[in-house]
Image 1 (cartoon, helix red, strand yellow):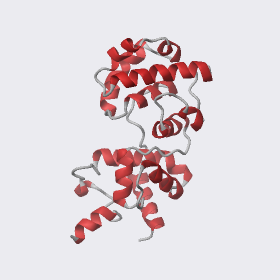
Image 2 (cartoon, helix red, strand yellow):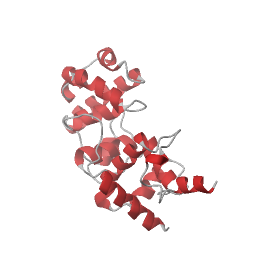
Image 3 (cartoon, one colour):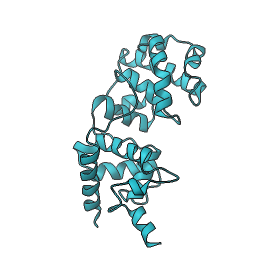
Image 4 (cartoon, helix red, strand yellow):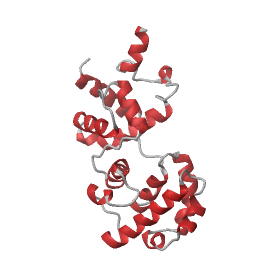
Length: 214
């Protein structure tokens, strides 16, 4: 099977089985998404969604968050991983938005990268989810699943994975493909015990077909 054929089969499968894939983070606008994304680092979406209702009630917008103290923020996010660092990043992000962008979340990738707490993966998530741009965010799920299926080859880091995926996935599917791979990794192609028996991609999956040969 050629690389092109594998990509075509994977896209065809997900279009049929996950046509409406989207983020599991709950948000109402780009500001709320950015907060949720910062909180989600090394933390489950389920936990983030438990934290954000009270957070957004206390800090409903950039203005209110920019004037918060670290102690106020930590109190609301303390059940999340690394609350001290995340509190600093959240307040720093809000202050940067006020100083540079009049309190409005920018849609430009480089502008997003300029915000505290927003790295390449997070900027791609916001670009893709909030602004519907063809951006491919690579988290641990995307990195693992892409390699296992055989969509990527010798990608040593998330950036290399991103570049290979963007090169081979048609632009109109890039945003949703990000969610396809995340959700597949979260519920089927799990790290320690992939559920190959429940997977509809075994026919094209390099990992599965290697197991069959052993």
